[in-house]
Image 1: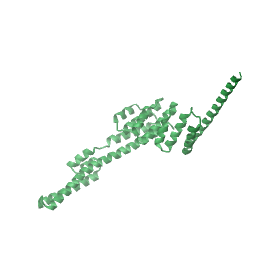
Image 2: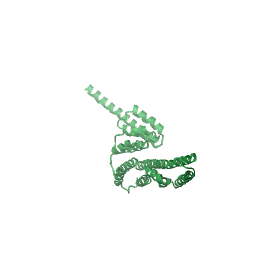
Image 3: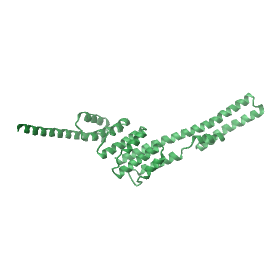
Image 4: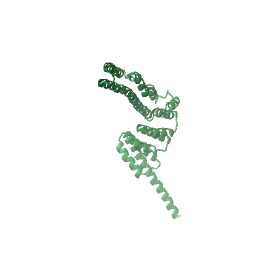
Length: 287
C-alpha cells in the first residue's frame, strides 16, 4: 500500500515537472517569435540555440528549428537557412512555410536543382498554396530555360489570385524578354561575314554596325587601290591587305561575342527578376 502511494506520488511529480518544463518552453517559444518579429535576429539565434541544446522542447522542436532557419534567412546566410528550414516536418502550415523559404534561399544561391526538389515536396493543402507552388515551379522552369514546363505550370495558375497576380504577370513579362530578345551569336557572325557590321545591326547595335561597315569598307578600298597601283608583292599592298583582314576578322569575332555578351546580360537580368517575383510572392502569402 505504501509503495503504491509512493508510485502515485512519483507519477504526479513527474507530470508536474513535465508541465512546468513544457510551460517554460512555450514561454521561450513566444519570446523567440517576438524576437524574430522584432528583427532581433542575433538574439533569436542565441535563444534558439539554447532551446535546442538545453530545453526539453520535443513537441515544439519544429517551431524552434523554423525560427532558427528564418533568422538565418533574415541574415542572408542562405545555406544555413536552407539547412534548418528543411528540417521542419510538422505541422503542415509550418512545414509548407519552411519549404517555401528554403526554396527561395536555395534559388538565391543558384542551387536550382535543390529548389526544384523542394517544390516537389510541398503539400498543396489549399488553393492558395497550390497556386504559389505552381508559380514557384513555373519560375524555376523559366530559370532553367525550360519553356515547356514553364507553360505547363503557368496553365494551372489562377490569374485572379490577388496575392500573387502581379508576380504572375511579372513572370510572363520575363519569359517574353528571355525568349524574344535573345539573339543567335552564330547568326550574327555569319551575317558579318557576308556584310561587315550587319551582325551587329541584327543584335540591335546600329551605331557599332555602321562603324564596323565603314571601317572595313574604307580599309578594303585603300587596300584595293594600293594593290592596283603597286601590285600584290609590294610591302604596302601586303600591309594594307593584312590590316583589312584583321579588321574584317575582328568584325566577325566581335559580332559573335557581342551576341554572347548580350544574351548573358538578358539571362542574368531574367534570373534576378525570377528570384524577385518568387520571393515577393512567398512573402505576400506568408505576411
